[in-house]
Amino acid sequence: MAKDTKKEKGLLIVYTGDGKGKTTAALGMVVRAVGYDWKVCIIQFIKGSWKYGEMDGIKKLAPNVELNVVGEGFVGIIDDKKTIEVHRAAARKAFEMVLAKMSSDNYELMILDELNVALNLGLITREELEEVIKKKPEKLHLVITGRGAIKWLIDQADLVTEMKEIKHPYRKGIPAQKGVDF
Image (cartoon, rainbow, N blue to C red; front, top):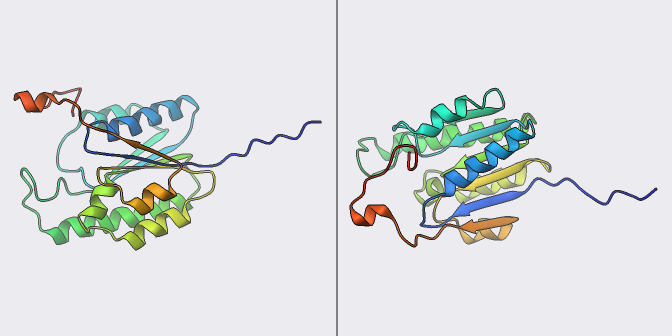
C-alpha cells in the first residue's frame, strides 16, 4: 500500500498592506471553512464601536462561526474619545482570549482581525505576538490581518498577501458604502 505523504498543517496566513480587503479576504476564508463544516473563531482587536454588516452576516453562519468583538473601536481617529489605557486593556483581553480559544482545540480556523494594528499601536507587544505564534496548535489555521505587518511575522508566515491600494472611491469624495465597506 502506498504511504499517504500528505500531512495536515495549520497555516499561518497574514493579510496586510494599505489597501482595503484584508478583513474581507479573511471572511472569505471563513465562508469556505464553514462549507467544510469547520468551527471558526474570529477575534477583533480594534473594531468594536461601529456597526458592521459582517456582524449580522456572521450570526447567520452560527453555530460554526463565533465572533468576538473585543476592541474598543478605532484608536485615536474619527470619534474615538477613549484613553489609550482603555484600548490597551481591550487588546490585553483579546490576547488572553486568543490563548484560551487556541488551547481549547475547538477550532480549525482562527482569525485575529487587526492584530497587526494593535501591535503597531503598542496595544500588545511583539513578545505577546510571538507567544501566540509559538502556542498555535499544529493543525490550526491562523489568519492575522491589519496593515503594517512586522518583518518577523512575515518571515514566520506560510502565506502573506499584501493589499495595495491602486484606486479608492474615497479619493473622489465617495463615502464608504453599506454592504461593500461596512
